[in-house]
Length: 134
Image (cartoon, rainbow, N blue to C red; front, side):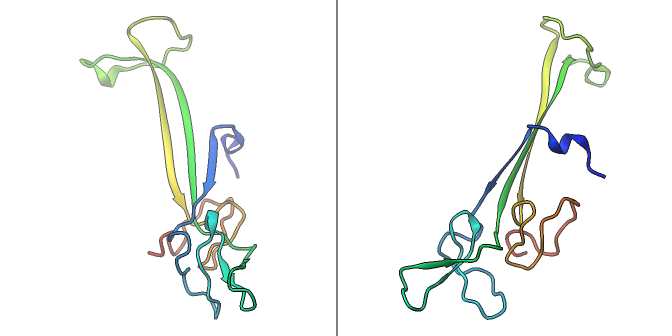
């Protein structure tokens, strides 16, 4: 079951050319693939070596970012374990905003397959190979 926060506006993603733009991509069947812009692999057209042929169904590398605002908390350097959530934020020097940012490199963008043959679904399941091939 998906948590409702998955659909909030606090999630961003950006495709990355993991492996380096123009470098050979991981071996896959008998294709000579190269890392393209935004991580989409391409082959060199045998008839026109200046024209790339992009492989539409694959993508490699995705930066995921999520941020969360937890509200205002009482803060004290002397008694950190006793911090309490303030239901109604009040202008006071003893309260501070608290938040967090999560950054992650994923193997591919959501609902796409990577160059290692694995699909990025909504199940949040780890892949057998990282975005960097390790």
